[in-house]
Length: 436
Image (cartoon, rainbow, N blue to C red; front, side, top):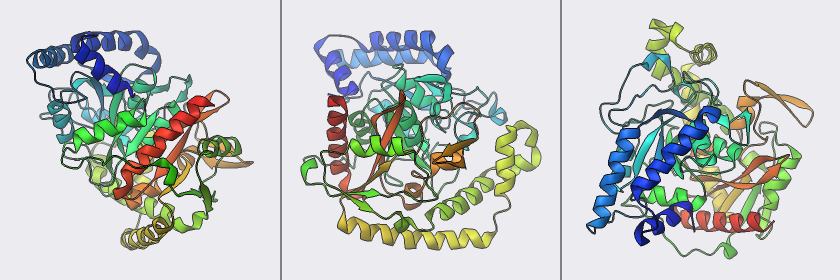
């Protein structure tokens, strides 16, 4: 049973109330968030009001589903009506959202209680430790990154402050912090979850993502946010053909991380797949993200550059140098890569890899040594997740175990019509890891 399902059952048998859950959540945030820095803003009054409304509806026989009365946090790139919407940047100091983003509106329609907004790397453009609110810290070791850019959402869930949170995912921004913090993170197929009211970074790569205590929690939230497209049920993990993506120079992986992630699939039939199937996807991602991110921020860079974090500003200025021909070629390369990966999915039901090739880096660290070579932290964090933003396929990170006390994530990928199998295998992985 997932955490959401356990809370839903307790609410319906009288074991708790939505107001009691909201008060407990607010108390946990007050107790823990000073250490972890997960929240940008906590909406005490709004949360309690919504919780009382949820309780009243349940008493009157109105049941909106498994999220009814459940506390949820929302990343500070996603508009929540009336709440500060800073996007992690001084550019939006004092700004408040005029309306709910569509995904937030659907959360409310499902009965969820919005607790507040969570810390993001400025404008979602980085590994997670450059925010106007300060860095989100990893609950397993507060000296380390929670990951980015949805680090606040991941820290809030991993620290037990909320059972589930919304994030965004442009190159791995939901899956990376999920892996580093030891929880589940899901990026559905491109366009599956509505993006209206979500501040863009690179629109052709941006996805709304979900971070939860378990993959089942993520699944329940996705189904609530896309009510017309439920995930079918009934797939058997026993029949899954899984391809394991071998390492590549562009995607360095610590041997200990690879071992833990691969071992979590020990009950499945797994075959090696050469990573060259992804070809130039990493270069394609760089061209698309750089071009689209600078297009989003060109006016701010020109008019008020001093309001940016210095590192983010440097990245945007570098992004401005991406020539138009590279962007056009990247669009063509994306379609070619998608055809190649579709061919691969003719041989395998799912593909798998570590979510991230390293464990959580120390805050502020920008270089990391993997297998004797130095690599950028940002590039290493993104290497295994970003191809799936380029391609738009569903990708899920689930806890696989630990290396030196720090979490390791397993990443599973599938075509849009195999999400049920994806989640079924994820459930089997959770059982295997629990038994280990």
